[in-house]
Length: 398
Image (cartoon, rainbow, N blue to C red; front, side, top):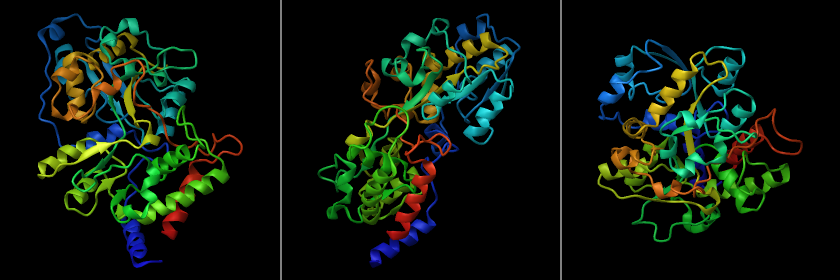
């Protein structure tokens, strides 16, 4: 092993696993909500909201899902005005989330996330959404409103997005004259020691599978067999050998680029441009052609155990209303879903390119790049454990 290789292995040993690598990992908005600096946006409630008759008056709403996605801050004034109590619960993992609803625990609202949503819909966790009961539904960007990942096999809507984002890579334009178009370019000698990456195989393996024609880049999950995984491993090993280090999260990746120790980070988030600008540095973003624009969305669903369905509908409609959704986007440093909100949202929500979701056919794939779980892999198809084992092997070789 070269000296550079030994240094990389040392850095790898010190790195934390940051990116999603299993279904216990929360959706990206959790990173946004906890990593971003606290917003100064104050929750506002219009007189109309405060004075209107509410189906929720005096109610207690029980929410199960990710922190920051139940309108804890954004609807505080409205809850106070209507005597509404909000109980929130995150059971610790997606399997426990499923189990809690399956055993009949009563929840009126729940997180629905793009990367597990289709399976949760198929598992019968949620009620179909009657979108005619949502006054703000038609204000939603078509690329989100018409997305197939919101729907079950019956064609009905089961989730209402409240925030979204894409999946770029971030680079330093002053040091990268020709941004790479394909993930495979990072195997070339010219990229040695010039980029950082997260300690997870999901994104790299999935894009390499697409680059090799092993996967078509659509649908739920990345399905490749054992022989195809070997090809992906060999290519990922070269990418890992060229990497300068693992980045310990988006902030860390930003700081490394600002310091001049990296020109690109494979796992990106537009907020990194803002953080770099605060330090007097200019970064930019682009997309690997294999990523399909990346993409994620998180939303609200009504569990089959819901006790107060009328209040749940009213609450969801408020979360995607003009003023409130603008605050949601700002507070989560995420894209807003309401097209009117995009005009009034603060800078945290303005870092996204809304042209990506303005048409029925979104330029963002909103696809789960992960392989099947161990107990869900079809015969001959590699699972998440196979990917994690392969990742550990190439880390040891790098």
